[in-house]
Length: 157
Image 1 (cartoon, one colour):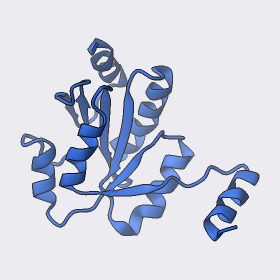
Image 2 (image 1 turned 90 degrees about the vertical axis):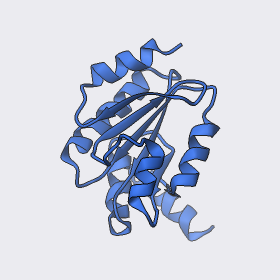
Image 3 (image 1 turned 120 degrees about the horizontal axis):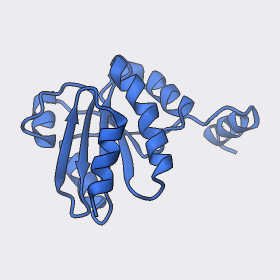
Image 4 (image 1 turned 60 degrees about the vertical axis):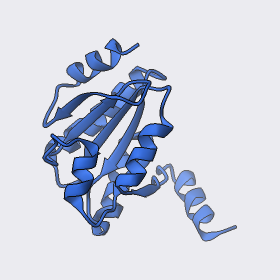
C-alpha cells in the first residue's frame, strides 16, 4: 500500500475527513475549466484563508450546493500562497466543501484576473456564475447574501 493510501485509510478510520486535492490553475487552465463544464451551470468561487468574508461564505456555498443537488457545479479556487496550502485543505475538509478544488498558480496575477473578468479588481470573495453554454452571466464581488446567489442560479434554465 502506498504511503498516500495508508494516510487516507488512517484518516477515514479515525473519522477525520481526507484532505482535498488542490489542482494548480493558471489563466489557460481557467479557460479550459470553464469550457469543460459546458452543459452545466457553473459557480466559480475565488477565496482565500485570510479573507474573513470568504471563510463565512464558503460553508454557505457548500450548503447551497447540497440543497440544490445536481442543479449546479461549485468550483473553488483558492488564491492563497503555496505556504497556506495545508490551511486551505483543512478548511475545505472541515466544511465538506465539494470539489473540484483549485489553487491559483500564475506568474502574473493581474493578467490572470483580467482573463477571468476584465472588470474584476481581484477583490475577494468573488463568484462568477456561468450558464450551460459557458457564458459568464453574473459576477458577485464582495460579500453577497446566499439568497441572492441562489436566486441567480435558479433563474438559469
